[in-house]
Length: 569
Image (cartoon, rainbow, N blue to C red; front, top):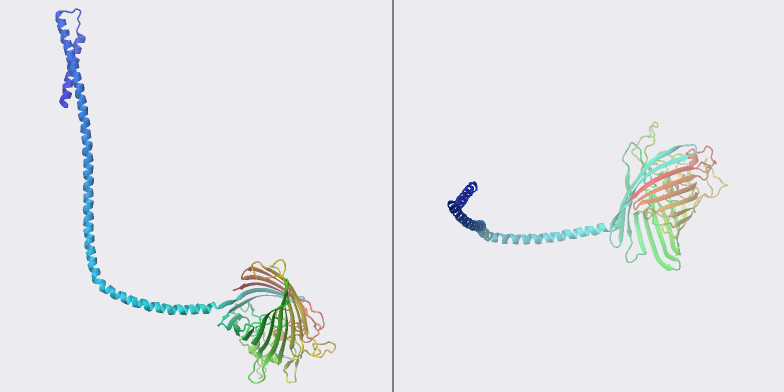
């Protein structure tokens, strides 16, 4: 190709020189010589044209050859790429073959090792089967025990509450009193088997005061007392649901109000109940029960106890339903209450030792101690048991021992009514009560201990409680008002309601409201407003506490406000 290019270059240069010579020459006339030269130039020009054509053809051939060379180069590159890919694939294949050979060798070694371990594995499998069987048997036994335990616990439930209280006492002529209190109760109750159920509970409160479970926040942050509050077993056969018998320390099992016994007090002894569901007109149930309550056992002498009988019937007519009850309780030998031991009253001090009048001495008791202010009665145990004051009439015999002026044979009649309203959250409740002491003295005693012949028996109590609403569900509200007139010897003062102005001989008003904040939390407000009914009688609170200066004067009302927050579980 280089030769072709040189030839074309020389021909081009020659043609250029000839044209230059021709352009510079002048031919004024065509001589024969000139004609020969022209002829020669024409021939040269023709040859040059031929050479030009040949050169163009040669260049086309050169271009074709160049294209063919480029095409060959591309084919060679493609072949080289295929060759490289083939070599790479071959190398990978060889590597995979080597890896497969290595794995095959390892597998062969593992197979050989596995073959060696087969005997050991068979032995281990046999041992494992034996151990698994033993473990399964043990697990079954444990599961049976756990199921039995779960079944036992499933029959029981926890009960109780925590209450925080703030309260104030306001009375004309007396310094205001404010205090904070706390109450904790915790219990467990449930079925022991198909015929028996049982329960126990512990609660805060002084051991010398069964009428309250409150603990006052005082005594330099000391720990608070807690003791057994309930413990009982009830027999209620499945084949005779109409019969039940309870023994121990239990909550009240009959219809009642705090008149005959404070709500925090749990009686002790035995109770037998016959309860029949009936369908006869408006009557739905009839219940009859007997009770034997023990409150004074002595090692040498006669015991003190209560014999009682209660009858109740339930009836319903439209939106109105009610339970009417009649209770009779006879207290045998109640004078033991006026001669209680130091343990019973939770005494904090002793009397003198009789030698030089030395004493009293402090003792680690926590309780109300002996009832104070009662004329002629001991200040140190054995003494009067009356946690909230002795408001019954008492006398002192020739030996210096105290006795009740009246006996106590109580008859209590209650009609508890419930009336449904168009709003299920606001039913109406009305409790009517009349109570009388059939064994009261014919005439009371005045503050000097003399008989007041102009007055008859101080043996009656009557009152009512009216309420609207309930406290069952969240945001439920209840409002109520209660009124009570209770004469001096109508009930036993030592165990009567502890929050009212005095255990007996009172005129008492009560206003209350409750709000169910949550399903287990309730806020309560209670306003007690009461005074001594007859301040001319012996052992009345107005004279004993000196809220009046002259017996027979009308006492100013004592206002007691209580704010409670109660959490139940």
